Image (tube, rainbow, N blue to C red; front, side):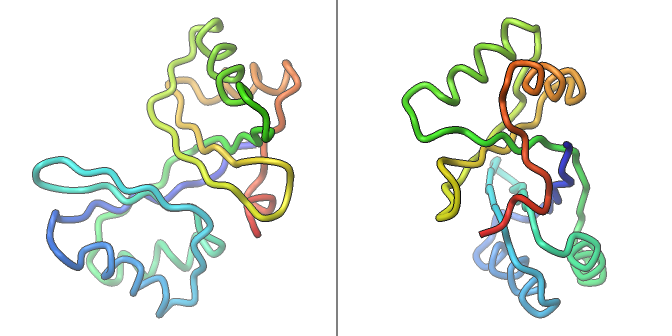
Length: 142
């Protein structure tokens, strides 16, 4: 189960993230997860949203540069080492995690970890074949 993540490229300036969330607010789009990374000149705001196509249209209509990326959503149990075990399995199977971010949901038994790997299909198969639970876009809700 691959999810579509939206990446928005933003200038490193005051109000840039507010502008992105404002566009989503005005379009009636709800954030499910967000990650913000920066470099000296620009940032990348990664989003999982409830209305992806609406979000893409609204962001583009407002002159923002956006990209869609396939990511995995791993359900990590609320136990020590749960995420580590998944990472160890991926490493043993020669899959590199390019980036990751997570959040704890008030529903369920743990956290949701978003993973972008160098080989998403291999990571997907490896995790499922070894008993890890991957979530669909409909599962990533509160």
